[in-house]
Image (cartoon, rainbow, N blue to C red; front, top):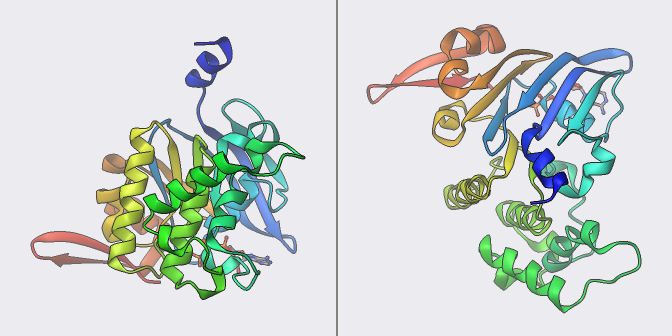
Length: 261
Ligand SMILES: Nc1ncnc2c1ncn2[C@@H]1O[C@H](COP(=O)(O)OP(=O)(O)OP(=O)(O)O)[C@@H](O)[C@H]1O
């Protein structure tokens, strides 16, 4: 093992310190600091408008922060870019862009290719493999505008996989997908985790947090809490995060937590 990879093993995949983001001078993310543990599935939860997407985007430099530091494997995002994969919210993508599923996945490889090199057979094979993994191989040459919402989501996940990153950011990957796609996505997350990857997921369904995730960040403009699900996903901290909007209902003898959307 070389010195660089040894070093990267000892530093956290992501540390955000004192992050504040404002739109039109109105802060929507305020002084947020946290560190992600390596090789874990992490849920970022909080009510609508809590700043979850904004925090993700600011971390990746997609929206400017007023204050704050981001460290990815101990370095800047710019330097660590090739180790980071991002699956944006489905609604934020222009699906009318004339391109097909395979090309979208291959775009995920550009970071590995350098400037002039065009994707070759090897890149294409890798992209096909990842489409296969998400059950979309039959749709490789289908225009993305002609895919269903769940299929589009799968293509975006394939693209992230093709990137072969170490740290993934996913903005509501489960939004609007059917049960089969949700299962496929979670299987993929588990696979990423087994491979030692770290995944930060903006998540809405509180009833699946305990089942799917190891670690949780509770956000409502400020970071309310961060830590392992067992100790952090508690009724008290959830109440603090969601305020009066949280209802706790008991379903089949098990307590289920439901955030009003
Ligand atoms: N481009 C923008 N310009 C101005 N205000 C914005 C912009 N994007 C988001 N906001 C506002 O910033 C706040 C945080 O939005 P953000 O999308 O980060 O929240 P969120 O927690 O991801 O919400 P949701 O769960 O509804 O997706 C909201 O009040 C939103 O209206």
